[in-house]
Every structure is written in C-alpha cells, then in structure tokens.
Image 1 (spheres, rainbow, N blue to C red):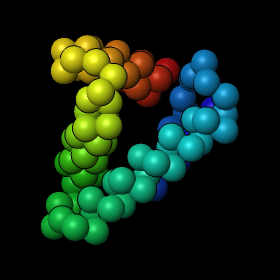
Image 2: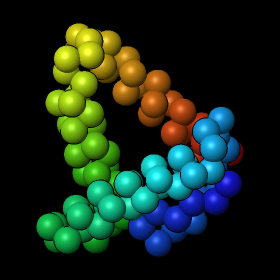
Image 3: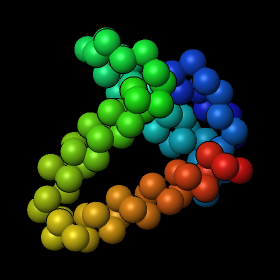
Image 4: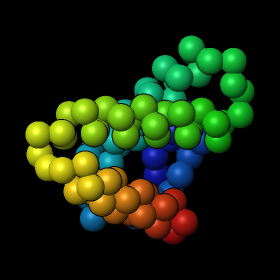
Amino acid sequence: MEVEIFGSVFNVRSASDEEHLQRLARFVDGKMKEIAAHTTAVDTTKIAVLAALNIADQLVREAGSLGSEREIEERLGKLADRLHSALES
C-alpha cells in the first residue's frame, strides 16, 4: 500500500486494512505538520523524530492506566520495529 506522509510517498506492507493504515498515515502527517509549524527545523528527519517523541508521549500518557511503564516501553519498541520493517519493505 502507498501512504503519503509530509510530502513523501511510502510503500508499506501491513496486516492492517488500507483504511486503517491511511488513518495512521494522516495522523503522523498531521503531527509532523504541527511540529513543522512550531519549529525552525527544516530537516525532515528532525521533524519526524520530534513528531515521534510527541506521539510516544501522548501514547504513554493515555496508556498509563493500561500497564506499567516497562510494558508501555515494550509496546512502543514493538511498534517501532513494525514501523521500521514496513518502511524497509
């Protein structure tokens, strides 16, 4: 499947349906645009890292009641691994 994030098109393989993946891509795209609007950084990689930190912070805050910090970190690690694999495909 193809998704567009911050002006770049990515071919991604996922077990999720295309609609779900497109929603995720729009969410990440929105976070990156939000970060870009509030920073002087122009490097896409820096903006992506800042957006990832913002998303991780949001996830940890919202998921705090779902498990320990260690469990959340493990989940984030697994998600990061899946994202990395999908982007390399």
